Image 1 (cartoon, rainbow, N blue to C red):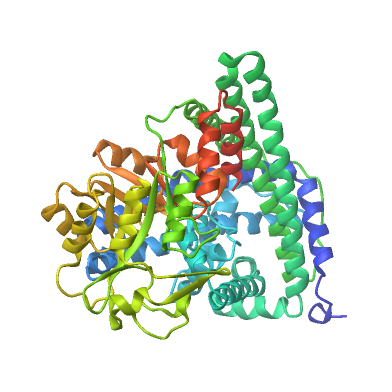
Image 2 (cartoon, rainbow, N blue to C red):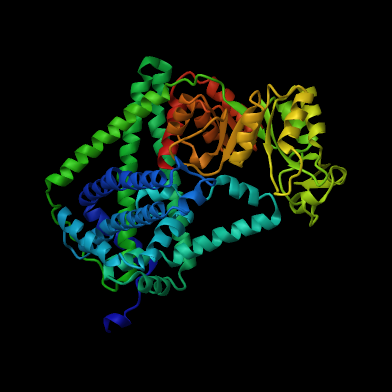
Length: 595
C-alpha cells in the first residue's frame, strides 16, 4: 500500500499519539512550553501594544474607540502601523504555534531538538508564510479562532471576543437569539474545519490557501467527532479548574480561620502555585493538541522514544526567569487581595429591573426601587413632535412588533403603544412621567440620550429641564454615546454630572471634561480605573451580570456597575462587604487566571 493510499489516522489514534509523545518527553515539553509562553509575554505582547500606541499617536488620538476609529483609519501612517501590527500579531501567534508543531514533529520522529534549532525552523516557516496570503492566516488566527474559542496561538489574541452586551441584546428577541446561535454554530463549524490550517502551513510548507484546502479535506466528515473531542477537553479543563481553585483556596481558608495575619502570604503562595500549574498545564495541553493535529495530517505512526532532553542554558534561564515572574506577579496579586476599595460601588439597574417587567417602563423602575438599587439607568429618545419618551431602540419592532420608527410617531402615539417582553406587558412612558415617579420613589437616574438623527429643537436642554423640574438634576447622571452631546451637556449645564459611553477602548484614557465614563466591561482594566480616578473621573462598567465579575469590580473599587441582574449584584456587593479574609478573593483570582 502506498503512502497516499493509507487510511487517514482516526481522532482516537491522534489523541493517543499526542499522549504517548508528551508522556515520553514531558520534561522537554515543560521547558519548551515555558520558554514559548515567556517569549510571547515579554516580546510579542509589548510589541503589539507599542505599535498600537504609535498608530494612535500618529493619528492624534489618545485611544482607539468607536468615536476615534474613523480618524485613525483616515490617517495613512496610522493605517500603515496598524497593518504592521497585524503582521506582527499574526507572526507571533503563528510562531508560538510553530514552536509546538515543529517540536511535535521532531519528537514524533524520535528526535529531541535544541531550542535554537526550533527557533530557526520557526522563523523560516514564518518567513515562508509572510506575503499576500498572510491575510488568510491573520483572519484565522486573530478573528475566527479567538471568536470561536479556538485560540491556540499567542495569548494576547485571546482577548478578542464579541462584547457581552452584543450577545445580550441579540438574545432579547427570538430572531436575535436564533441569529446569535447561528453565528456561534457557524464559527464553531469553521474552526473545526480549519483546525489543521496552521499545522499544515508549518509542518508541510503549504501556502495558507493550500493549507485551507488541506484542512478542509482532512476534517471532512469529522466535524461531529471533533466537536465531541473539543467538548470533552472543555469538560476536563473545567474539572481541572475546579480542582485547582479548591486546592489553592483550602489552605487560605484555614489561615483565615486560624492565623488571619498570615492569610495574604498563604494566598500569595497559593496563587503562585496556581499560576505555575496553569503555565505548565497549558503547555502540556497545547503539546498534546499539537501532536494530535500533526498526526491527523500524517500517515506515519509516531516513533516514541524517551531520549534525553537537550540540556541548554537558555531553557534553564527561561524557566528560572518564568518562575521569578510568576512569583512576582503572585506577590503583587496577593497584595491586591487585601486592598479595600475607598468607596461603595453603585448598583445601577440597566433599564430598570426587568425580571418581572418590560425594560424602560414604570414597572421596571418600581421593581428596581423595591430591590433597593442605587440608580436606575434608562434611555431617552425624541418623538416626532419633540417630546421625550423612555425607549431604547429607534424602531418599535423588537418590543412592540410595529414596523415604525420612533421619530415617525408623536409622544401621544408612543405613550399609547403597548410593549411586550418575556411575557410581560406595559406601555412606553414619557420621560416626564418616568422622572416624576423616580422622584416619588427617591431613586436617582442615569439618563442616556439616544439619537436617531432626526432630532429637532433642544433635546439636551429638554432632558435637563425635566430633571430639574422633578428635583433630580443634582442626584442623577446624564450620558451619551456622541462626544459632541457630552460636550454640550458639560458646557451648557455644568451642574449636571455628564459622561460618555464607550463601547471599545484601547489605549490611554482621555476622559476630557466628563464627570464619569461608562465603558463596556471588555475594555475595563484596573489601570484604566487608576487613570480615571487620578483625573477625578468616575468609571461605570456595563452590562455586568456574572456574579464573579460583580465581586471583582466591587473589590477593585469601580464606581458603578450597570447590570441587568440588579438583585444578584446587590447580593454580591453585600457578600464582598462581609468578607473578613482573603480566601474568597483568592478563589475569584484563580478562576480569573484560568479563564
